[in-house]
Image (cartoon, rainbow, N blue to C red; front, side, top):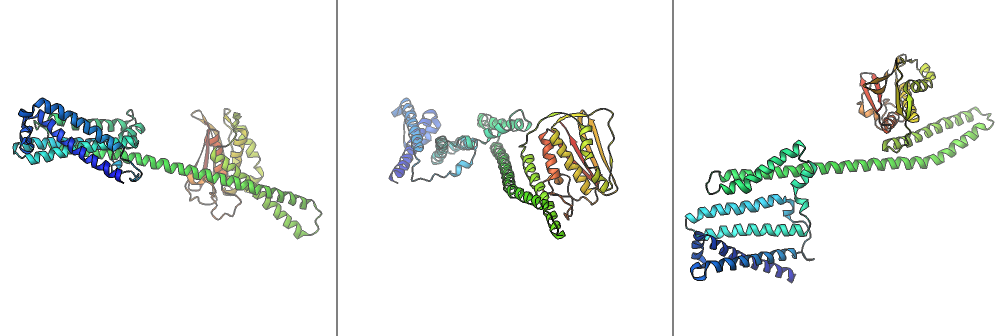
Length: 456
């Protein structure tokens, strides 16, 4: 505690001695300033000598600045707070402009004050200008010492994110340079001729403050977006890992259940109720196995953790093969498949296994939700050189969900959930298409449901 007090007393003494040296230094350059200062301190350049005052005051001021900077650099001690100070929230450029503005406006006031022959007001303005310069020096030393300089250079961070070749970066750079030129060059040159008013100068400083904190606002929005995006990615990853781990844990006992059900089915059964119970167990266990498989595939499709083997495929052929597997279901639902053959073969590079799974999920979706007695249209084309597959059907129930929501996990068009399904079919299909470099889009108009597969 004593060392802290000693350090602060030293700084105060150094500030006072440095101020006296600065006054003597200015007195040596300005006869009019020195005349009114002599009325307070009674320094005479005639008796002491201008050259001696100039050299001694310059050396003394330089020593005081070095001692003050050294004292500030070593001011941090275990007894002092390590929390960032209030000034850390300010942009360093703004602190420079603030210190320079105080210094400059004090000079302007000194020029006006000399006309009214008020030496005490003259010394007060000199003290304000000197204190502003020394406080800025202290802030600079502290930021360099604590390695906070780069963090508080808002404009540097802004231009690193929005370079000059981007319109926003170029516009902000022009506004910044224009204000700085006026503050540091144009106004100081014209200050004595009074060609430009002080209010214009203050407005320019205010504009620079607004622009600086607009930059900080944009940077904070970008940081907030990146943080929320990172949290979202982490949440998705944790959810995927949870689904994968739970699916693995359930699959082991489920495999045993299915095996024992198969053994029960192989036994001679005389009781009809027992046979019905075994049938229910068999049906439900198979459905649970399909759900777990879908969960595993959905987690892989969502994270892109899939093995993709690209090969040249005939879209008409593979669509025809998958559609043929659903002939019985189409007949049960009284659905008529309309699949016009294109004039030219349509080939695409894709993974045959993944593409077959995508088409299976889409046809399965149609057999569940299409209106009975309607037609199902499948069209294979090559639009703008990009192969596409379009499937259209009429839904048996109104579709109230947005098109984008239908490809989310566990979303089903059947809100009453009377049909079998888990709401993962379209989600898996979309993930598989993206893993092959393509895309899946859905369009709904009334009860018309259309799915389009596009390949890269």
